[in-house]
Structures are given as C-alpha cells and as structure tokens.
Amino acid sequence: MWTKKTPLAALLLIARFGPGVEAKVRSPKSDKSPTSKAGKKVCLEYGFETEVIAAGSTTPIGASGPNGPKACVTSPVSAVCCTEAAACALGSPDACDDYAACLRDPANGPVVVGDWWLQRDVSYGEIFFEEDAVCGEITSTDLNSRTKFELWDDTFLGMDPSLFKKFSVGYDFRSTGGGSGGYLNLYLRATDNGNYYDCRLDFSIPNVVGTGTLVVTPETVPSSGSSGCGGTPTIEQYHADNPGAVMGVGNGELYAFVLNTGSTNQDNSGQEICWSDASVQRYDETGAIIVKTWEFTTL
Image (cartoon, rainbow, N blue to C red):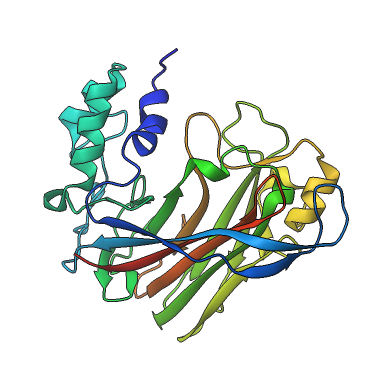
C-alpha cells in the first residue's frame, strides 16, 4: 500500500546504482568474528567487500538561504525536483524513477550521490566534492546552519544491532567555529515499530582543526544520546536493554547513519569538515563479515 512516505523510501531501492556511482567487488579476505549467532568464537571468511565510487560536484551547491540544495520531499518549497517529487508522492513507481533520476542529475547538484542524500532537510550550508572527500562548509550565522549527509541504504534499516560490526570514516576538520563541530548520528528503535526513531546516539570528532578517523563499534561510548536512549549507552548496551531493538530511522525513511557539520539552534559559522572513505562492516546471517566502503570523488 502506498503512503506519502513510501515513494520517498522507494527511490533509493529503485535507483541504487544511478549516475555517478560505480561499484567494485574485492576478493574475499580472512578474518575472525567475535561471535557467531550462537555466541561461539569461530574463524570466518569475509563475504564480499564492495567499494562504491560516489562522485559529486566540485562547485559548491547550497547558496546561503533556507532552501539551499534541498530536494522537494513533501512540501512545494523552492528547491530542486519539485515537479517530480509531487508526482512521486501520488504513488507512481515510474514517477519515483523520474524523481530519483532528477536528484542524481548533475544539473541539480546532484543532491543524491551513491547511497548518500546530501542536505535533504537542512539549510544554510554548502557542500562540494574533492578528489577523495565530500566537504561541508558553513558561512551563515543562522542558528540552524548545518551540512548533513544521510546514508540511504536499506541494508541497515531494521537490522539486528548484533549484526553491526563497525562504522568508520576519515575526517579533515579544516576550520572550527561555534557549535558542535562534526559528528555521526546513529539511529535505533526499541522494536521494529513504526516510530521515526526511539534512540539517536551521537559520536563526535574532536572539535579542533586536524585529521583523523572516526570509528564506532558496538562498544563505543557515544558523546550524547537523545531522551529515548536512557542516557548514553553503547549500541551493545542499548540492545541488551531492548532485546527487540533494530537499527535505522523508521516511518518510511531508509537511513541509520548521518554525518553532520554543525547542529541545530547553534551558530555554526566558520566550520568546514571533509569526510572520506566511509565504511560499514556487518555480519551476515551466517556470521561472515560484509564490508561496504564509499569513496567520495569528483564527477
């Protein structure tokens, strides 16, 4: 049954490998899994390691203003692909194909690159791609100035947290300012319910100029958590407290991971952060390790 949210959720399923995306599969590697589903230590082979080349524009998109490079989603704001969004919202798969293609069109940014949706619902930030990175820069003093990169990959929507192994991403914090700096949001639901999410965990990079790698595992203590988390539990602890927990934002949206520069209700002006080589490792249901890496580059 189609709903207003369904076409939005469908578009990444419809056009998973659109323009600007190249997928490579690497040779299997050997590794060990800490536990199998039965809880025993076993020696396992890697499943396929997939590398996705996600190419975007070197020209900054997202002029200062409330609409920036945002795509139309459900309301007719002055943004890109509004005609296609309106048709998709009526429930036509063909129209959603057109919407997906519009979002991936370089003439419109593009605002969808690989499995990443850029600046979907935030404002006053500019995004641009370099040879090995995607960057967010904030020049506005507006309290809600941010850049945001959502990983719309339905693999992680509804996934058992025990199958999550690691998220990692390189960062280059080039210029600090006010606000929260750079961080990863990771979303969880207490059960596979219809909620938007129940718990949002935030994992921050150091708020100083410099480079490094942000690594999040089930044992990593977050910097902060939303009210539904019950404090700042690790992913492992949240799952122990909520045995039916699943990963991902629900209610028709397909992301579990979001990379942010700046936060809401803060003056984030002056910040510039570039992200590179984002990677997620998970176990499949046999216990084999599956790796997917997104390499950002230019069109």
